[in-house]
Image 1 (tube, rainbow, N blue to C red):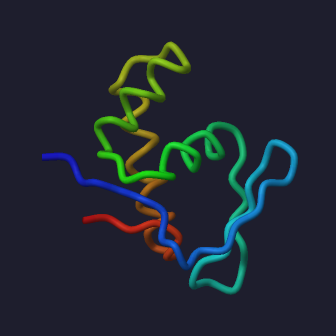
Image 2 (cartoon, rainbow, N blue to C red):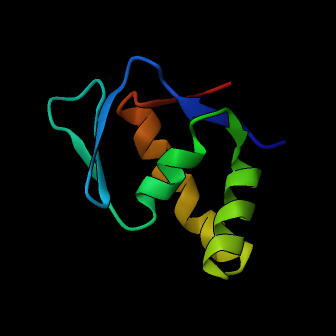
Length: 87
């Protein structure tokens, strides 16, 4: 079963050009670049990790195994810093 993820409503964030700057429970803000802002946008509403992988794979025309290998650690880092949560 795939976890459901979404933004933590307490996270502060701003879009700056093609980047997103997010501040969670760490002193340093995170700067999301590349596919990071797209993933952040997909996390507006709760979504399963499997759905995130499927959507990103379709968007970038990449196989789901490749995307899954990148998405899992990215979500773990965002969760560690308190800007997203799972349930």
